[in-house]
Length: 109
Image 1 (tube, one colour):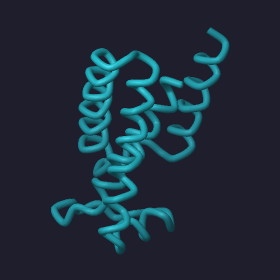
Image 2: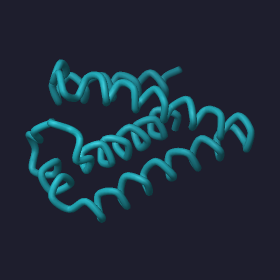
Image 3: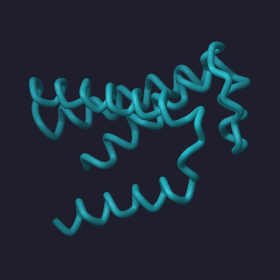
């Protein structure tokens, strides 16, 4: 569940990142182009996903620690997205494999 909350927060922040006019990032996938062209729905989806991930943290860890964990996750996800997205250092399949390994480790452990 923690991996799912972090994934939701990361996707939500990325959706909001793509709608920014200051970014020089060129999207690769079709859904990235759609997010870049439709700013209002993309911002709504991004904020909704970040709130959903935050509520999942609050559900897992209760109010105080959940809010703190959500703020930390938003900060870390935002830092990584702002740093690595323009550089295109990670490919889609590399990120997908990391996410699958995290989900499997969370289920097994």
